[in-house]
Length: 65
Image (spheres, rainbow, N blue to C red):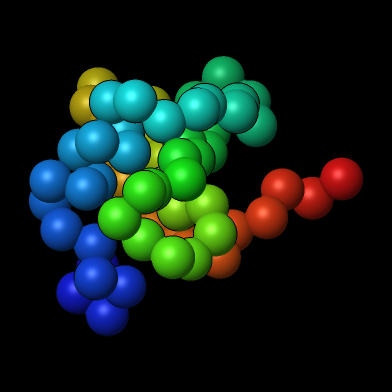
């Protein structure tokens, strides 16, 4: 996350207020355009288990059509 300049505060904002798109019952992406950042959408790929597990964080994210 440090390489992307993603702080815990920005990650929390992404997870709490981002737009969710489910792949299946347990896997989803959460995206948000961050005003403080000049890169495209920021995206977290997450898994719903007993807890929310963040698998990876990406920037310059684009949805596949």
